[in-house]
Amino acid sequence: MNRFFQSAQMVLCSLVVFFPFTVHLWASEGDSKPWGQGEVFAARPAMRQVTLTGYTRARHTMDIVSEEEGPCFKVAADVGNTIGEDGVFCVLDTTFVDIAIDKNRIDQKRVENRIAYEIKEVRRFEELVGRDSAAQSTLDAHQNRLDQSRFELEALKNEGENLRERQVRHTSKVPPWWTITERAVEPGQWISAGGHLGKAGDFRKLLVPFSLSPDEYSVLKRLKGTTRLHFPDEG
Image 1 (cartoon, rainbow, N blue to C red):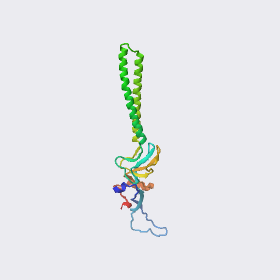
Image 2 (cartoon, helix red, strand yellow):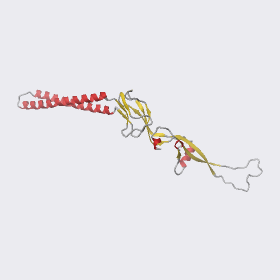
Image 3 (cartoon, helix red, strand yellow):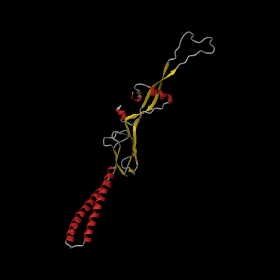
Image 4 (cartoon, rainbow, N blue to C red):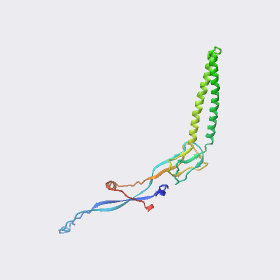
């Protein structure tokens, strides 16, 4: 049964329900005397077997969508395969975002070097202003350049976090141990942001929908004990 759960195939199952009906006995108009006179007949409930047919479905399903764009580098699973613990289904090429991350790292180092220099300049002019050897406006200008460099560094750090998050989102994932039911991507294919990659479902627990008439549903609700399902495809 575990093998069946891990495949994306539908399995026929049946629910057998016994529905009661009542038998009524009466005499025809042509009889001169009531049929069965002198005997007492009691109407007893009889049982009729009804087989309801349903097909198993995944308890949960999801569409797999790409959050980024780019050429597909790798597809980790095919239809019917179960996704591993890492949840990875499709990986896009991250060459350009990797280059952007490296450039951002270099830009941060460049600004950090400039900040270190401007800190020394501010301290030097603070001493000069204290000895009345430099104008206060000159010190203010150096302090302003230092502040702007710090703001620039914060912006670069924020950009770096954004790039690393985009790098992560180049990998499309599904919940671990879900089964792939549709694959709509191949390695080398260009994927647009929001592009459809496939579908996956959770077959570890199954749903079996049945179509019931109001009377059948009423009888099913009154059943006591365990309701048994038979899976013909599984024997």
